[in-house]
Length: 444
Image (cartoon, rainbow, N blue to C red; front, side, top):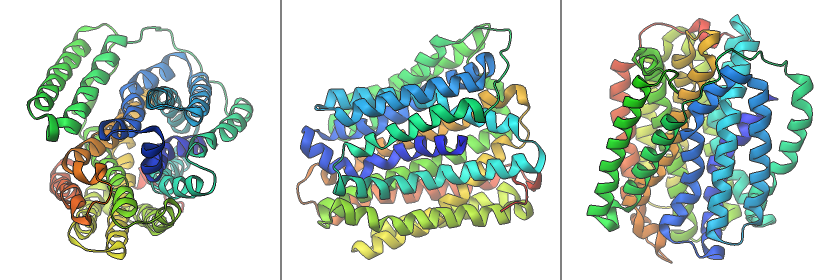
């Protein structure tokens, strides 16, 4: 049930991808507004994730999970009713806030409810859903857009959310409160503002030039301010020393890259298939079916390989496969080549997702469960937002032209291939050596 809630949140990162061309036409969205429909969700999901993780530790994970689920469900209803860009982006922001409360609380419940091999199996299912949810989102988005219209990509969350709100209180035990009641709101605001500036800079640097670079520089300053605040406050949002744990840093890095490549790939491919190749939303969604299947296959293969090879053995291979597949999508021609390339890439990314969660959560104590899950999921969402912003900046012509050539998207896919290849090299050094049998368990 907790995994279902998480699946819904991850799905909403990409469910808009296939519908974006239709949403843009209906609401007259420009390129930057199109980017923000995706990125404002991931920005607030990630930017407030650490608050959600710490609040789950302080006030009780079940209480926070139910609050976040209620906010997410209500915001989904508003998004479906949106008649303007401003309302839609505001509703997506509301979804992000709800998700930031729900996701780390739900993962904290998983990590504290299960122990030993059961915990390993639960984490494997959780990480697998994280990868699959992104892929299934584009498939569902295409089907709903074609059959019922784009508002239903948001309305579909409402009955699911209501059922979970009714069922969770009896299915999940209440979590005890802790004594402290301090939340680092300034830290959360700085982290969110920094990432917003970075996304804005990456999105506009291609057309705005100097203004885009100013935004990126401002992001660096704001991140430095965040680090200073975290060192100074009595109850920091996150003890930055936790990122000096190599396993947590490696997991955060892997999840950011994998999510960025996967979500940005769907974003580009949706516009390429519909604008350049003339495919409908339904056909585009169906064309993503093998990509979804490949993601699941990659997570399953990683679950088998991790006990023997460990994250250091699996992650570089997964990222190298992702780089090869995305490279095919960049330099190939035609719909079939694009789908094959994305599917090969998704196979590697599915394996990377499981490696990332395994590395980050292998040695987590119950006291740090909420904040660690918050860190991992923060990088998940920031990776998605930054990936979309980066490819939006380099593929601007393809997103705004009425009939772009497929080559308009080559630079975007090429950037993703290079990012995955560089990450594969970094992973061979950054990810700790050792097997991960305890972390992933042996259940399938």
